[in-house]
Amino acid sequence: MKTKTIIRSMGIAAFLCAIFLFSSCTKTADVNLTKDQIEDKDLEAVSVEDKDITESDEDLTTVDYKEFYEQLSPYGEWVQVKPEEIGMKQQTSSIDTKNDKGISLLSLIGVQDANASNFENSAMVYVWKPSPSLAINTVEGLTPEYAPYSNGRWVNTDKGWYFKANTPAEETTSHYGRWVNTPSAGWLWVPGRVWAPAWVDWKQNESQVSWAPLPPSAYMVNGSLSAPVIDNNSYVVVEKKYFLEPNVYKYNNTYTQSGERIVVSDMASVIGLVLVDNLLFNRGPDVSMIQTVYGRNIELVNITPVRTYSEIKYTDKQFYIYHPGFKRYKNKGNGNKWLNVNEPKQFKKYGEWENRSGKNEYKSEEKELKNEQKELRKDEKEIRKEIKKGDDGNMYNGNDNGKKNEGKVNGKKNNDNGNKHDGNDNKQKGNDKKQKGSDDNNKNDNNKKGKK
Image 1 (spheres, helix red, strand yellow):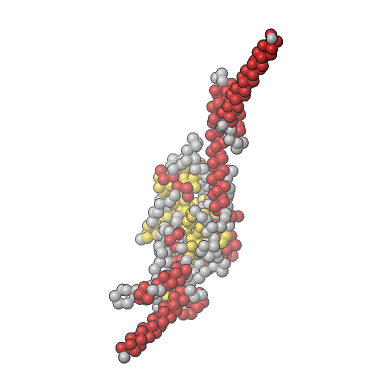
Image 2: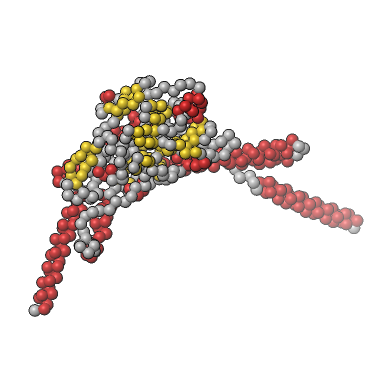
């Protein structure tokens, strides 16, 4: 009787577990539904007001960025990344898998890892990787690479310093979203819905001004922009007299006249994005100071937002810039559940693009070229030094060293050639001496025979 009761209890328990697993899997599957299915079942669309500048990490999964997906696809590719890899916080699921005491039922039945894996896939976000065709040559002799806020010019507008990019794709990414520089893929653009004249950080000294793209962690909080630490290598540095030039990247110079690298962190910080009438204004370098440097008045351009591409226009006094409307999707039930409400039509899945060549090759070639240039500069100094010695009376010695260095410049290791030849000379002298000794002995023997 007891055995039957135990078996019956085990059967009931197994049945309940099966029901629970089915229910849990169904909830997990909801996370991976298509946009149309989600709209019909769980979500409602709410228009985002233009004056709503409170962005957050959750926007990447709750705001519809279809406009950007379609517009930027021809100029690069969309790729999946994990939120934490671009400076965002990893989100947690709010699927109700806990009892009243806070103990995870999934962990009790040993299926937590499976659900975590499914959730991890759903928590991916999409970022834009610019096409190599947009790369620019920022340093003479090096492989071109993409650099945000370089291919264009700075314009003084009624919204502050506005970066006018040279291509439609860069015009969009210069005024929406943030940038992150990754070791494996280079610069990646993270979508954002709030417009700004330029999402950059500013620094300057007496003769130079510099700027760098703000990372995804930079948000306006209580009217102030968070101030993240940005790597020195992310800054463009130009002399103030070149600040307004077209194709400003041509004047990027991160080295002083003495050849030392400029430490941007030693420059003075300049106030950038601020709120003016609940709209973002980009201060940056003082306009009067730039006018003094250029010796002329800098015309003010007015910014007017438009809703359609056909209305976009740029004149000397007026910029009609594209300002799309955005929608945010809210869950009717579970309000905090992580859901990707949309995705690009074409994109590279996580893990498919990370190890692709391209940026890594650029980095490798750039590093190799820099090392070669460094060696050439070193050899040139050595040659000049030896030539100077030759001028002081050691001409032959200088010429020999010059030939030695010349061989090194051509990529041949001749450091040991001199020693090798010296050894051969000594060896040859020894052989000659030995041969002479043999000849003398033979001569003595012949003389003895003659006497006999």
